[in-house]
Image (cartoon, rainbow over the protein chains, first blue to last red):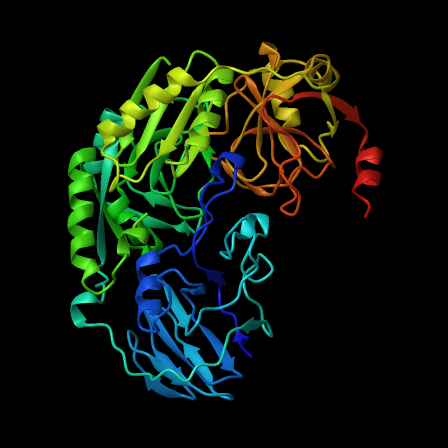
Length: 309
Length: 216
């Protein structure tokens, strides 16, 4: 019993629990670029918050169902249709064997999540079913989905009657603001002084930022240090880039700032042309704001501390 | 331990006098089990902690205790011999590096292969090996703008190190050669062929030998 891929779109991957604890072997965590949206989809179906779902990038995708189940669509703003009939995001949707589920192109945001009741099977590699494409790990053969792929899932007679309350549907502001701790006071300070734009080089590894070059960046001879998703690095040319969920595990370019844990999920929705600001915070302030965010979301997503990572 | 500092709300960075000590403390912290990730850099270590459960000050205290407990181990193994094809046909930066250093390719090969090197750490991408022991006459900076795609098996240099790309990835090091050896296999345990601390000797091979080794 499965969903099968009719149109894979630009890049659709299976993503769920991240592959934690392997960065020292050079293996990034992978998992959803926007774990909050995946959790919201899973919540509507009674799944664990980070059960495997589908991450659909920008262009949309189309799937066929061979089974009666319930699905939910969240994240980047898209049209959803079952057999050509419009359906809503942020609500449980019944699909039956023979139905066609179409996810349209994203009007804003970069990644849409499709959760299926009971989750989607993925190859478990190093404790996780999430896809890490550069090394071909996890998910569906370690790669983006292609036409004809069969995604195993179980039948469910669950009622399709849940909806995400309005207060818990993330807005997609045109300009994002990310709270950061400064790693380099001077250059990190410069980073926070201007508005940046997401360039056309944006993927699950990282996002190149367009803006006025930052002056006084160290040369290309720094020893490599461990880096994590949310790190803003800058080569000597002064053009910074923001590491995302599949970020490499070490880097040798100067580190300017680190996006605070509370806001890392926002990175996964940034798309080319979006504007972006960085707001400086001390570690103490950042932790306090993380607690506030968790207090808010916990009302609808119990256990949500596990999705802000 | 030389220094410990908080990098962000959930990351601590430690500096050590030696890599052996950094690796020993890292191993001790992984046993401790209270850390989400423990990753070593060059004489450094970065640890991620759950800042909802552990206050940063508490985490800093804890690492100094663990740091004091760890002792630097030593193990000796035969050097791993890694075949490398140094040819301008497959190494896009070889000609420019030689020109910059004002040496010919044979001299570069001699400087890169005459002494053993040592894997310092794995990182950047699965199986990417940072290797110490580069002759100081081969010191070149990284590219100002990284390449979007460096082929798997590329052997590159930057600063005082050699880097080996086990998988195709973006990267900014100067590529001087390529190895046909598979360095990362996710089904193997451990998935990385080269482990930190392992000595490596680079053995020059011809383009023909390289291509013959790449046959399935």
